[in-house]
Image (cartoon, rainbow, N blue to C red; front, side, top):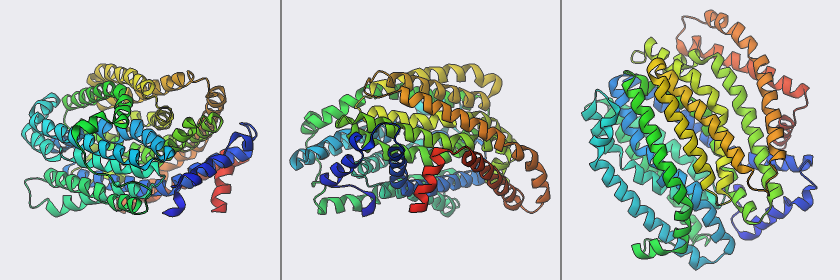
Length: 558
């Protein structure tokens, strides 16, 4: 995807010059804001489309799980078994790549010293392979001890599934390493396709193997493992292509002593260092929350997972895509001390996130039950499953904006090689989450645990914004007030637009009732979404919303 990337140094510097403050003529320049929105949409549109397909495939994977397992004890066993190796992804995979690898690798690319870059990549590959292999072996050995915390009925099966899926950690870590190299060079398509392959493989294996193994959970687990391998494999040809074009030097395994002693490795470890504490707390947070859910009754763990999957559909499409595109740019802008453009780009990203997540939250809150029944209800996923999932979903959704915002704000710190501030903010939010979940799990079950996450996400956002003020180069007064005003405007508009959805939703469903859930629920949801979206766009257009104008202008010119 040659048009989507800026690989050689001259092209990168050319881009920077075109966006420089001298040509922007101040922060309020409309052309500059158009440029920021254009940049995010141009580089993020294809990735967002691929992520949309990935999240839809992930939703189909959850629908497959709901169809085969419902909210049974076996479903809880699979959810916990898959969650345990996923806990470590934050350290070995996406977390470390975003926090440390991409900013460090960007510096090597800017220096343009091939030998040093080759040594750095070889050392990181060696270090990553060694540590992840050790973690997988340890995880397989202590699986019974880990599973014992959750109080699940299917203890033995959960241990088996955990051991089966723990190697997924190694595969996804290598995939993240490849993704870091590609994203640093502004190549996003392969890493966007990779999760699609994972989800499709899991679905195919679930149905293909379910009659050949002890239970459907094992078929799903096998699909996850195979999909993890393919997620790494599908990105490898792009790495080879970069090597052949001499855009990335040939790299391979090296000695452990050399790997641990490399300056680049030490810098990555230094940046990751603060997140190790955060990772430990993050693991404790997930373990405690899931343990509380497991002890709150059968089906609560699974209902929380189904609810989060629907929430992550939006997060993955937009927040993760924008954050992924934003990080390499912010890292380069911070390195070159272009703080004016850094500030502009961050505000544009925050406003785009608000424009997406706030209206979606209102609509999903209004039609949550219909959405859950449409996506999941079947013989295994009964009325009780719908009730449990709706309870969690109702209290998860208000946190959507804050979770999405955190995924934009955190890369802004990582771009400055500052991992301490987001880690500290994360520690505070984790403490809030654990405390609130412990207090609310018994009286409110899944709803209490979901609300705890929403509260913690809001606290995390507040502290990230507070810590951002410490950098005097970033004009926070030019970010906070416009972002707050814009968010409040969207809340008012969304509240107005959702009124017809409340009034007409149930009567419209009664018109299509008795024709199968995809027609009786799906068609009314589509009609309501069009009505809601149309009214919202009309309100934005009447008030001359700048973000909407920029987006329409960019789409018109594409």
